[in-house]
Image (cartoon, rainbow, N blue to C red):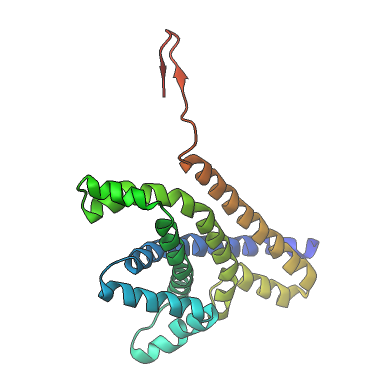
Amino acid sequence: MSQLLPFAPLLLKGLLVTVLLTIAGMVLAIAVAFAAGLARLSDRRWLRWPAAVFVETFRGTSMLVQLFWLFFALPFFGVKLVPFAAAILALGLNEGAYGAEIVRGSIKALPRGQREGAIALSLSPYQRMRHVILPQAIPSMIPSFGNVLVDLLKNTSLVSLVTVADLAFTAQMVRNTTGATAAVFGTILVLYFVVAYAFSFGTNRLERWMDPARPSKRVSHGDGRVSS
C-alpha cells in the first residue's frame, strides 16, 4: 500500500473528476427525466410517442454502446464531442430514461381525487401540475432518484474507455506503473463506496426534509408565544 502514496494526488484528482461527472450527469438526468416523464403523460401524441421511443431506446440498449456512439460515431455526422461532454451526455441520457419512468410512475400513483379537486378549482393544466401534483409527487421520487444517483456514480467507470481521466482511468495508470493490482483496485473500491455512501446519506436527509408528514419546527419566544 505504501507504494501508492506517491500517486495519491493523481487518484484524488481522478476522484474529483468522477464526482464532477456524477453531479453534472445527474443534473442532466433529472432534466431529461422530468421532460420525458411529463411528455409521456401528455394527451398530445406528438409529445407522448417521441418520449416513449426515447425512453425505451435508452433503457433497452447498453450505456457503453451509447457512449461509444456519441464519441466515435457522431463525428461521421459532423458532430464531434470532447470526451468529457460525451461522457456527461451518455450518463445523463441513459439515467434520465430510467428517471422518466420514476417521474411518470410517481405522478400516476397520486390519488385521482387530487386532480379532480384541482379541476374543480378551475386550475389550468400548468397550475394543476405546478401547485398540486408535483409538490406531492416529488417527495416520493427522491428515494428512487437516490438509487439513480448511485447507479450513475458506478457507471462513470465506463467513461475511462473514451479517455476521460476519471478514478477508474487514473487507477489503471497507477496499476500499470506500480503493478500493485490488488492495492490499486482495493483502494478505488473503497473510494467508490465512500462517495456512494455520502450521496446516499445526502439523499436520505433530503427525503426526510421533504417528507410532507415531517413535523414543523416550533420555536418558543419566551413570552408564551410559539411559532413554526
